[in-house]
Image (cartoon, rainbow, N blue to C red):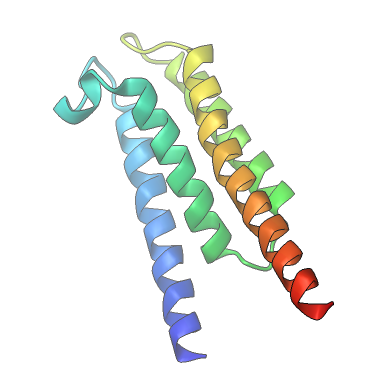
Amino acid sequence: MFLNTQILKLSQLSLILILLAVSFFAFMPGPVTPAFVVNHDKAFHFLVFFALSLLLTFAMPKIRHRFHVVSLFLFAIAIELIQLLFVHRGFSLMDILYDVSGITSFYLLIFLYRMNFHAKSHKQNQ
């Protein structure tokens, strides 16, 4: 039980820190992009939203996955809409598509894992 509480708190803290970091970099006015992102922008979008999906699942285990997906999707859209307010930023549908692909990939893996786990446990019960 103690380990579960630690994982929950660590997941919640990590989720908050990553949301703050994403917001900081997304809303920075001007063309300041970290060097490690410049040539890998779309991969970064995918990985960040995959990680956010993972952390959200561990940080809020009692909340349905549909809520997680919708929340992250709205966050992705909000980032792009807010970037319209900055001179050197803009709305990018491709960024949203890569964000959504990261979210979808994570929850697809969860679904496949559960299907495989359920199939194995069903076989063992027969």
